Image (cartoon, rainbow, N blue to C red; front, side, top):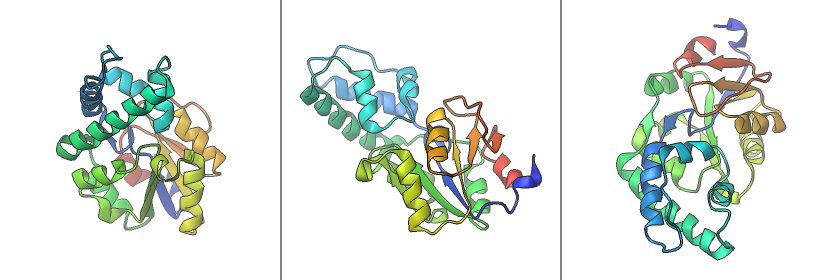
Length: 214
């Protein structure tokens, strides 16, 4: 690992899906249950479809998945999917990536930790419930809170907590673009859902690699 990043940052802002856990299998099950409650959609919601839109804002997800629905139908489907999603995740959660507990416990001793995600309101709280790692984080922000894009939410975290040297860890080009727009360096988690081949400051293939990197 490149030791040049040690002592370079004072805080770490994490993406959630594809970075700290993978909930796509249970989200697909939840959304499929939601689709059965309406009579104007006859489609199969698969884990692959969910993964294809992971990282997008919650509104944009349903615009892309169901472009032929009118606004009222799309809003109904989105609300149903959101409801079923939180219900199933409260019970089943997502797949926590290996080394999550040990890595976050170690990093929280030396860095201020945060989460910024494009998820709906309540989703990060479910992650905290399942992982039991809320105590490691000083704050979080999501798309569902204000409806703002991820870059603006990253800026909010930086400004609200007076962060002087943050770094963002994520797994998609959307994460990279958002961090860059917010003026925050980016670490690419290549075990997630996307591909990034830009000028990230580092690439990790597992969460535990952050221990040696930072």
